[in-house]
Image (cartoon, rainbow, N blue to C red; front, side, top):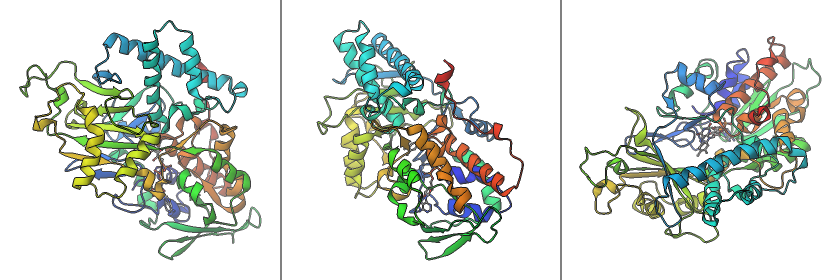
Length: 502
Ligand SMILES: Cc1cc2nc3c(=O)[nH]c(=O)nc-3n(C[C@H](O)[C@H](O)[C@H](O)COP(=O)(O)OP(=O)(O)OC[C@H]3O[C@@H](n4cnc5c(N)ncnc54)[C@H](O)[C@@H]3O)c2cc1C
């Protein structure tokens, strides 16, 4: 089970659970053609998550509370952060810290500026321009300025798109509840099981059935008890419901407006069009041993280095072949730095935007773990992992034993991408998100309600937390509409942003 939204909302709606939840629950097992970023796959005897690993912002975060309640292991991975120059050399720690500090402070300032000056910022302005102006005010050398701009590219991993494309006007919609990011070392599995409990015990769940049409006429009035929504699936089966929650990804909504009869309201369709959908992908590469933890001067396996690198950033490399028009910066997290028993000699790479698309296209037709698949991914990754400390080209310990890459962009049920984002040109992203939530009143009028990460409170957009919150919100809205319970709306997460408090 994988669908974040439907599971969280299920806690609120017990009575007519089947009616409300069937569409949400029509989804996948791990090998199913219907998928979700939270599904897992096996990487040669190792369960890895194709979607989320992190809990973004821990204060007041319900996913963090569930992680604690389920004794999941979630932590801020400890260890050294290393940065490699475009020439492939380790950047001096002092310079790297200076650059990191500048970029991190500037991101915080950009959030604040975006939040407070939203009305005055042109929709055409990208976050990159803000940084360029900030850099003009520093006394950095040209080389340091260039490093700052290179480092800024890594913000793309959070957005799922190149930083050049990120709107400054709506940058604050990328904020999380706080700046702490915890990695779920024990995977999201127990968190998901916990969230799914209510749905599993109360809902009639249909896997591997894709919704292909939704017929929802206008209700005759508030007391119209004959009103029903009819859903047809890919098996040819039709189901009827009192109310329906659509948790399909934004990318899927963009491509499938024709599923709805009568059509969705125009303003809602416009908002679905306006908000962009990102391109984040992951690649796990497993080695016989975490060679980057071994002291290169004493390659005895017992001689581990003191300050083990946990995170490596490879600034746009001149040493790796790549299409000239694509930014090729990469970053990886060492899963060897996780606490036992979750540590594993694996590097987790993130790719995004055009680079993510390029890699996905290269492996599109290749069987995972086949020779050709491994070769394509190896030729992409080797220039990077071979720059890590401890690498020895002749050593079998430095030859990957398994590689696995996600291909969300090829998955129509993942909306051919990752999650929503806000690119230059969007004029009223905040209003668009509110429209995606409200469906322009289609819930009350026709019994179709929307949830999913793209309908989350602003601080939760694009995250599991936001998807969870959106499910709570949709569940409560339906309860209120049906008069099923008294709901304290103060309990719902609002749209306030941390940068507003600074
Ligand atoms: C590579 C990657 C890494 C990520 N990392 C993180 C992270 O570290 N932390 C974090 O908080 N978030 C992360 N995210 C984002 C997070 O995964 C999403 O925000 C979250 O999964 C959204 O949940 P959702 O329920 O809205 O949508 P989904 O999880 O996408 O679920 C939608 C469901 O709808 C189903 N569906 C689609 N079409 C149909 C149809 N026609 N009929 C029936 N069912 C259908 C799909 O199969 C899917 O199961 C990541 C995403 C990606 C892609």
